[in-house]
Length: 427
Image (cartoon, rainbow, N blue to C red; front, side):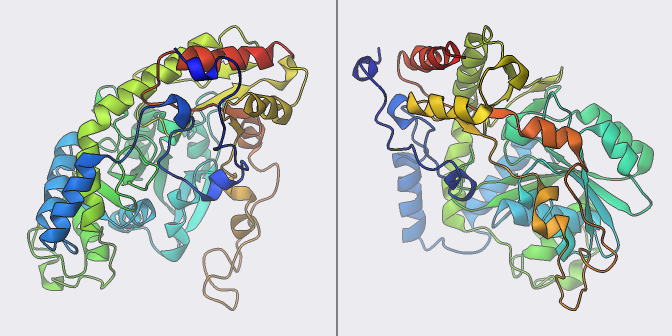
């Protein structure tokens, strides 16, 4: 039982300004007083110590290559390679499918900026699309409306561990020839009809950043079964590591070992940590999945809270966040007041903390990346304004994020549900 909590609130040392969550992402539980889970333990520390003693500090070491082999098997792809972060993984994937000057890349506005930020640096323009209002994920029908002769890639972001409608997206890809890049950074271990996300589109990309389910502190990984996509990705960012072991064909052999000269290589010590955590992923997903299902079921009687829809055939994983729809027409107070009251009761809730990308000045107003009004976000770039994506703007202003626990202590679910209901009864 939660004895220490029975007479009052949790000692919420974690009750920091909500805006800090945008910039400071840690590997701590949302409610550490109620969660036994610790991301890094003795097993990770022991391996890092051993790697340090054998000077396994740079390059494509044995630990790195073993992790990549395990990732290939886990995802079900022919090829995988690690990089320094998730944004570099997206960069490598875009380069792999040939995104370049004059191209367009379609991406939901509701995602982390790293899902699209490499495109302008490759000379391509982002084209932001709507989300499905129920799932918060890319809307395939809206994507179809935004395809032009310049469209080179579509970014399917499995946001918060939920899974996009991959059947619809892959049908669109087959029809148009446009590749799908899966951003799986939030969704480690999520499935679409029994297949790992990241193995369905032409290439998958993952962040292994410090707050991710499989964490290297800072790293990323891409996986694909397309040899040309893989070889191009390796050429882009694996300087001095391209030895013929990594390249799948002799097409680019003459560019060894320096490739393009860019270095996106992952740090071996971080990959050592990730290799341990990959072994723990099934248990982590099971714990977080039980928690979220319990809380969703437990608040079903609150009329102004509604679970985010999961497509038939999808199985969530990673559980990077726990959003619920807030229905303002069914509540007497604003979403901000509701969240504030939850936090006063010790429930570390928040409103949506990912900005819609089309509202950021960088994308809304444009930016001369190369000075003198040059670059894909300059010149005749039209930008965006409020109202351009009305569904995304409406839905994302009415999201409540509840805490995610991995290994809750006995009574934690009841404690959280009791506080949520206590607040909800006032409204």
